[in-house]
Length: 85
Ligand code: SF4
Image (cartoon, rainbow, N blue to C red; front, side, top):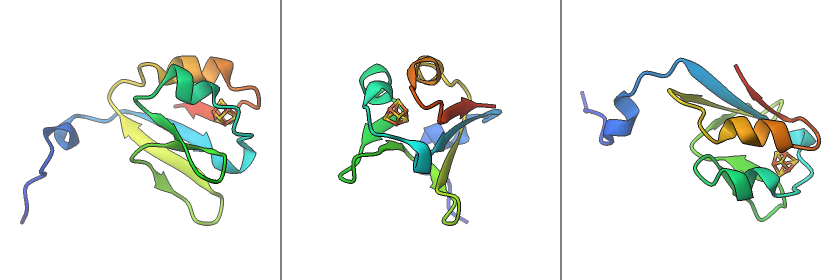
């Protein structure tokens, strides 16, 4: 039984950031506004850091306690492929 190495992992997660990667056009707006959660990949699409990706739908999901700057990313994404639930 291993303890979680990062104390971060012990935070309560009650919200989800969702990134529909298939729709992403790689404009980079989310990355420039929210480096905490987003990074650009070599294939020219944003990646939601630390997320789990559904292999079929390519939807990335990350549980967080505070979506923080991802809220701004939701507002600026031109194809509305970022969501917070
Ligand atoms: S803002 Fe939207 S379209 Fe632009 S890189 Fe981020 S997720 Fe992709």
